[in-house]
Length: 63
Image (cartoon, rainbow, N blue to C red; front, side, top):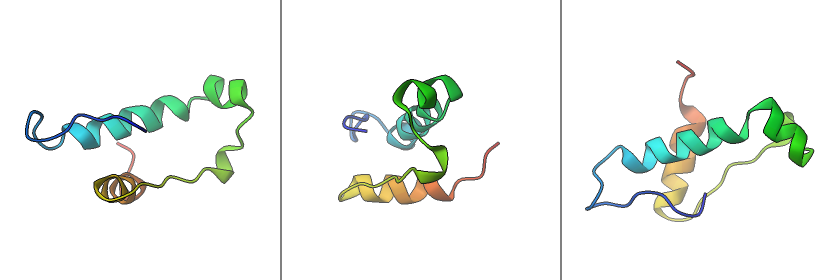
């Protein structure tokens, strides 16, 4: 994800919510099929605060 809502204009957890939204959108069957993505081979990464967001979303439980 290239752009997410940034502090201080947008308070926590706005950036995390943006990342979750994008990941859930991408993991839809129709999107995976459109781009020919194998859902068992997806990697999520980030740099600096984006790395923290990537680490956080990979540890969230669905629910």
